[in-house]
Length: 175
Image (tube, rainbow, N blue to C red; front, side):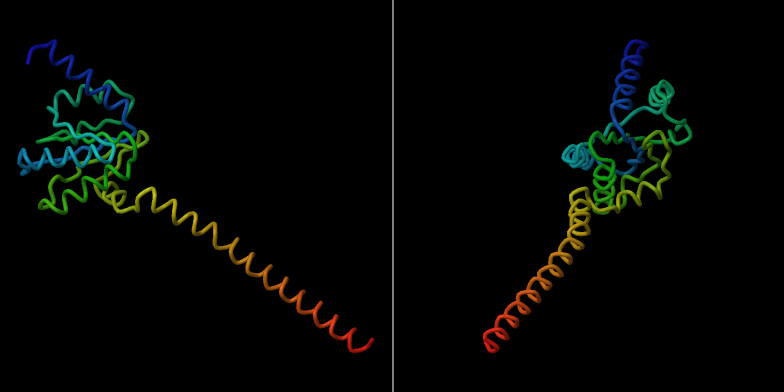
């Protein structure tokens, strides 16, 4: 690759890194081209992108950003996952794909909010429920106290109505 193409590749990769809130480095050893294409489709559906990079170009691109140094993980075959929409969805997509494909690819590390995530942390992130499930759980937690209050108030209103009926019946008997 001549110098101009290398510089263009570095610039393109640097722009993707800058645009993505989360970046995962993976080792895709053992994946066929067909499976890698399937992985790319899976990631695209979750708002992410998978790119195979040369380590030397990736080192230069990462060096030109304000992200922490990841050069120690740029060894061997490296695939970069750029999570553009949701950090959990991208990690979950790779993790679910790996479960179905002999634990391939594997995470080398992740970078989220300018902090390095170890492979165990990325896997833990992948195990979180989806955003929609978390919203539903939050709504349920917020609804429970309101529902209990409404039930308690309804009981008091029925109690008050019973007292009024009893008072009315007592007055009718007395008068």
